[in-house]
Amino acid sequence: MKKVIIITGASSGMGKDAALQLIREGHTVYGAARRVEKMQEISDAGGHVIKLDVTKEEEVKAAVDKVISEQGRIDALINNAGYGSYGSVEETTIEDAKYQFEVNIFGLARITQLVIPHMRKQNSGKILNISSMGGKVYTPLGAWYHATKHALEGWSDCLRLELKQFNIDVVVIEPGAIATEFGEVMLEPMLKRSGEGPYKALTQAMAKATRDSYEKENTASPTSVITNIISKAIQSKRPKTRYAAGKFAKPMMFIRKYFGDRIFDRIIMSQVKS
Image 1 (cartoon, one colour):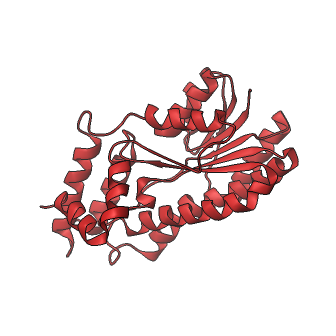
Image 2: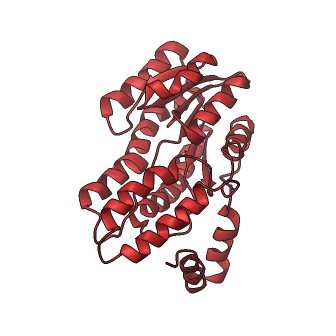
């Protein structure tokens, strides 16, 4: 059945790919992102485009109001907007750490709060939160990013219990290494924060490992891997509470869960030797 869908972070990567696929499947899709100029392809495909910075209350409220005024309902919210802020805990300012939470948690939470009343009224809906394997595992220099994704996992679990009575599904999607702008976006700030100080060797090694994971051919999974899961969850009458997919996701989470922290520490650090 045709659904009305909002997807944040739709200007590139997983968000844009998912938006285009959902449009092809016949859904009414609103792609939302700061970079409107990057979403022309969504408009050309028959979708709708909204300028949205999830940290700005007026833009979040206007986006939800626009969809309701034009469609009268919201069947699915895909919370995809987010980024990775990397650098040592010592050298990352609290201001930067707060902004990481503003985007990855509080912005996501605010648009969700505004969508829920409409889904309650319908007695139906799906909220898909794009987390990461980083919500279950960890990497050096990623403390604030991983903190947001670990928080999103627990936040989503609580939300799922609250909304079950209203026939609203809450789904967590945990991508592994996906061929997106993620690595490119995290590298420059990480090197600026920690590339010359006491964590220089670790930072340079982490930068190399990131480039190897995201820039070399076939080292990261295509965005279609996550798009297919999003489509499956949207169409399912009873979606799973969690889906993990993409390079490294399932094996890394398995090792962390069943082999413990010390073994996982050694495996992770073996990948970032200088």
